[in-house]
Image (cartoon, rainbow, N blue to C red):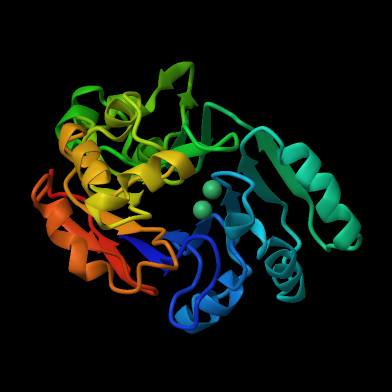
Amino acid sequence: MIDVALLGCGGSMPMVNRYLSSTLIQYNGRKCLIDCGEGTQVAMRHLGWGFKSIDLICLTHLHGDHIFGLPGLLSTIGNCGREDSLTMIGPTGLVSLFQDLKVLLPYLPYEIIYYEAPKIYEVNDMEIKTLPLHHSLPCLGYSFKIKRKPMFDTKKAESYLIPKKWWNELQKGKTITDNGTVYTPDMVLGKDRNGLKISIITDTRPIETIPPFIQNSDILICEGTYGDDADLEKAMKNKHMTFREAAQLAKVGEVAEMILTHFSPSLSEPDLYLKNALEEFSETIIGTDLMVKTMKFKKK
Ligand SMILES: [Zn+2]
Ligand SMILES: [Zn+2]
C-alpha cells in the first residue's frame, strides 16, 4: 500500500488557507518528499506521519516556492534523531544549493548524499526517473515506479527439486549454492506483476516529451497554475500551464487520474475552472491541501 499526500497546493507564496505545493509519498513506512516550500514542515505536522523516516528528498527546481522550507525541515529531521544518511535529488544547481545549506546547517547529525540531475535513481523497490521540463529555471519532472515482486511459484520450485529450506531465501532474491548446485530466484518466482506509477510534473509549459514520460501513470500530479483559458498568455509568459493544457497532457499520456496543483495565489477557487480540464480529460480532480490518496497494487 502506498500513500500519496499533497502537503500543499499553492504556487508562488503561502496563503492563509493554502500551503505551497509539496508532495509526500509513503511506502513501507519510508518516505520520499517532493519539493519543500516554506511551511512544508507545518503541513507535515498536520498530517502527523513523522519526519525521521524521510529517506529521500526530490526537488523539481530551485524557485523559492519549492525550496524555502528546506533548512527548517532538515533541521527538524535532525532534531527527531535521524542518524542515517538522507538522499537529495535535484536539477542543475543542486550542488551550490547544498553548499548554501551547509552555511545555515553546519551541524546536522546525519549525512546528505546528493545527486544533481540524475536520469534514473533506484532505491529499494522504487525506480525514479527524471525529465527536463520547460520552465524559467532548470526543472525536473519525476516519475516514481513502485515495483511489485512476482508471486512464489511452488510448482516451479518443485520442478527444479529445490530443497524447501531455501525457498524463503530465494523468494527474497538471494542466490543459493548448496553442495555445488546453484539455485537462483527466477527458479521459484512467477511472472512479473504490475507495479504502480506516480508522476509529478511542476513547473513547466506543456512539451511533447511529457506524455511519453507520464504514460500510464496511476496518478499524475500536475501543475495547473491558471484555471481560466483567458490566462493562457500569462501561462506562456510565466512558463506555467492552464488547467486545459495540463488535462491535454494527461489525456495523451493515458494516465488513470490527474490531480491539479500549484495554483496561482490569484486563483482562490480552482473548482470554478475544473470544467476546463474535464472537457479534455474526465479523470481530473482539483488537489486540496492534505489530500491523501491510498494506492493499492492491482490484483494481477
Ligand atoms: Zn512554483
Ligand atoms: Zn517555478
